[in-house]
Amino acid sequence: MWRSDVARTEESETGSRALNWQSEGKTPDPSPVSIIIPVLSLVIMPVLVAVKKKAGTALGDDLILAGAAETGICALLSVSTLTGLILFPLTGAAIWESHGGGRTCRPTIDEAATAEPVGEHMLKYQTQTDKRGEIEIPVSGIRVTPMDTNELHRWIAATWEERRKTVILGHNLHSLYTWEVNPTFRAFYDKADVVLTDGFPILKMAKWCSGRPLSARRHRIGTMDWLPGLIRSTPVRRVAVIGASPESNAATVALLRAGDPERTVEGWPGEGWNLALEDRIVGTLQEFRPDFVIVGLGMPLQEEFLSRHWEELPTAIYAAVGGVIDQYSGIQKSAPRWLGPLGLEWAYRLATQPRRLGHRYLVEPWILAYLLAAKAVRQGTRGADASS
Image (cartoon, rainbow, N blue to C red; front, side):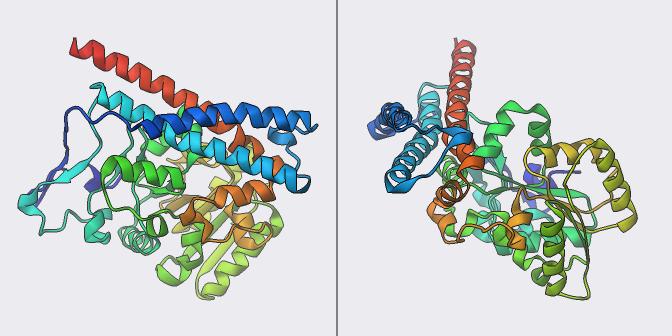
């Protein structure tokens, strides 16, 4: 079983403790600000693009940071993009719901049984505030299971004791875009036990639509927030590290071993990744018998690899971590952790790796905004047809 039993259970042994999706009827119309700001960002973006082109520079993979003026223009582009990206989905969802396009995603727990624990898996190890399972975000349809670092470590410890195969994923705007355009990726995410709120906008959307007191400081966590404490805070004994360059992989293995010399940590680089190498890695993992596997092949390659070989892979906890192996090893400088809760980690990464990440942060969000807007219209149309 992939997703935790508790996330889908409507009754506990002590009686009714249903996780209900409460219909709240027609929601208030979205505020003018939530519409005006995205529209203004649509106006600002083409103007800034024109200024950049006139200056002889290009967007996307050819982005070049040259001087203070260029950096300022890029910063304005980034802010414009981020503003539109955060507010377009929220505005679309609000418009959709205000016109009767579906139910809200506000989970409620029956008050008659709030004193008892929900179940035996994930929610058992969360705080009282967070005993509400996964959150489904409207329009996009993605599900997330917000946790803080300590809660995740406790969940890993409990799952390790149960000896079951499971996977830890994370949602940010890039994964949301990939989720929309890649069916294999989407199916794999839909089966996951834990999907962390890795991106600041994802956390805000989850908080907005659920009404839960989610904190950016606690619940917006990336792999660099929980990986350093993995060996110290969990009982995992045999760790496999898959992906990155030989140098990064070896350095990460050495760092994890240093956390506790009694733990067994082995690594296999991801350079030259192909189907033949996949088969060899699967065979090696079957022999190694890990209980925790860090897969850092980048998105969506890592999810497709896990999806293709899930039945063959040994029982373990798998974590898809993207490019974090390079960051954890120190080969690639990671963003200061305090930027994450402020929603500014993307800006640091864009400034330090403009050629590699320019398309992701400056182009991809607009494609995503279009996809979500189109989906909201389709959902609204279906809702109107169903009610007529």
